[in-house]
Length: 133
Image (cartoon, rainbow, N blue to C red; front, side, top):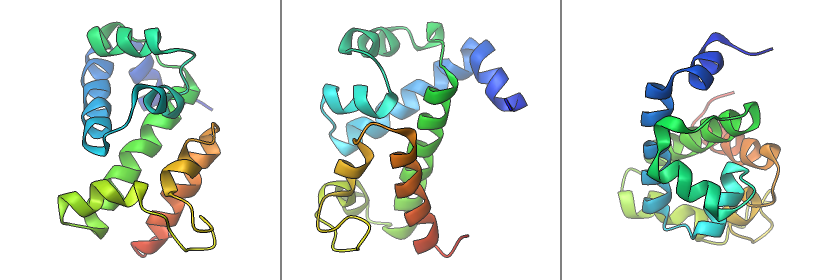
């Protein structure tokens, strides 16, 4: 079922025009390569990424991409709460993690596995660390 907010994101270029720059700012803070950004957003190629960056108000996000951006924003927010020092929050994704969920790999590797659920798992992990459900 598509929520009202999701419908608005699809239809309102003002919303996507501000959502995508926020996502790209997060990607910049995380120092992600273009290929990593493409994978996290579920895009088919880097050209689509460049189009979104140059004209975010013209981007039309699919349900999958809306979910991805939501998880990315949630992961970013959780990291800001858990690790208030910005440099630590930004580096958490690229530090090998010994939690059984990550099995000694970087959380970013889990997020880049390709499926929306991979982002959801990292978001849920961080929410649990924050004391959420």
